[in-house]
Each structure stands twice: as structure tokens, then as C-alpha cells.
Amino acid sequence: MRILIDADGCPITKDAVELARQFSLECISVCDESRNYDIEGAVTLRVATGNNSADYAIVNIVRPDDIVLTGDIGLAAICDAKGALILDFTGKAFRSDEFGSMLTRKVMKSLHYDMGLVRKRRIRGTRKNPAVLKQQRKDLFSSRLLAILNEIYIRNEEEQRLQAEAALQEELKRREELRVQKEIKQQEELKLLEEREALEELRRQKELRRQARRNSNKKRRSQSAQRAQESDSKINEILELLSVEEQDKLEYIKKHGTKVKVIH
Image (cartoon, rainbow, N blue to C red):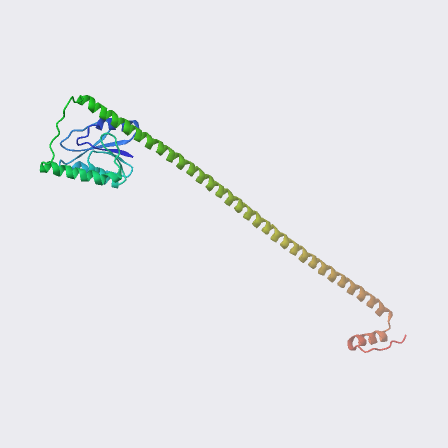
């Protein structure tokens, strides 16, 4: 937020700059080259001398969150349309619904003066001291602008607090999501590990069964070989007891399968 001052004919420039300094706000004073406004704490923007040149410069640089100090109704209407807060030199805020009637009155008043329909009003009675009146207006402006800046400051503080709370809630939500995702990932990793262990156990059981089958087959082969060896031994023993003729008959039976009665 900045404070933009239409310094051409502005009687409260120093007061506005002082308040801007108190709230650490950037203050830009816009005037034409014919005026000398170098005020400490404010940036002076000088434009070429010409009709409404300072107003055009303010219109070009105004932003929606700025505060514009001006007494020009046309400039106030344009800046209001851009979203800025417009104050007159007494600190009174312009309302958007007032610009139409204010511009109409200004144009009609100018026409009446040009046509000579309005005469300057004579001031009767005792006038107030101009210095006192000027100071009263400055005090009124300072009090109004101070109230507005305090209100904006409090609103900004509240917005910042709400934003901080929202950011904190968002951070807590993000951390909770990360925690849940981490737990899910850990569960998936644990499940994958269990599946790998189960698969490894199945492979080990399969290998054990395969080894058991190999050992069983080996044992059966060994037993078969042993039985065959024992059978051959018995056959050899029997053959040793048989005569040559009986051995020939037995060989014949083995070859041809014919039953031949052996006579002892």
C-alpha cells in the first residue's frame, strides 16, 4: 500500500508524509515542474507542466491498494474505478455513488460562473483567523487519516493472522498427508517383505522336498542294488550246489522261459 498525493495545491502534504512515515508506508508526491516539493520521507515525482499533467501521472501509477489524496473529483473518480481509496484534503473518503452528482454539480457551477448567473458571496460578520482555520483543517485531516490507517493496519494484521493460521493448517495437513503416505509406504514395504519371505520359505520347502525325494530315490536305488546283489549271491550259491546239467537247464529256463522240471 502507498500514499499518492496530488501535490498541486495540496495543503496537507507534510502531514500526510509524517503519517506515512509512522506506518512505514511509501509516499509519492506528484506535482508539475513549476512547483518545488522536496519533502523528506516522500518520493517527489515531477511531471511536465501542463493542464492536469499531475492527474494523468497519478492515474498511470495508481494501484488497487493505494490511498490517493486529491481534491480533484475527476481524478478521484478514475482512481476509485481502479480500486484505490480516495481522500480529500480534509481526510474524508469519497464514495463511489457520489461521483456522478459531484461531477454534475461541478460542471453546473462552472457553467453558472461562466454565464454570470452566480455572484461571489460576500462574507459578513467576523471571519475566523485563517491560520487557526488552516490548523483545524490539518488536525481534522490528520485525525481522519490516522483513523483510516489504523483501521487498515488492524485489518491487515487480521488478514496476516488468518493467512498465517491458514498456512499453519495447510502445513499440518501436508505433514499429516506425508505421515499417512509414509505409513502406507511402510505397510507396503512390510507386506512386500512378508511376501518375499513367504516365497523364500516356499522355495526352501520345495528344495527340501526335492532333496528328500533325491535321498529317497538314492536310498531305494541302494536298497535295490543291495537286494540284487544279495539275490545274485544267493543264485551263485545255488548254482554252486547244482550239477552241470541242472545249471544248463536253469540257463535254458532263463533264456526261453520254459518250465522244466528239475529232477534231483
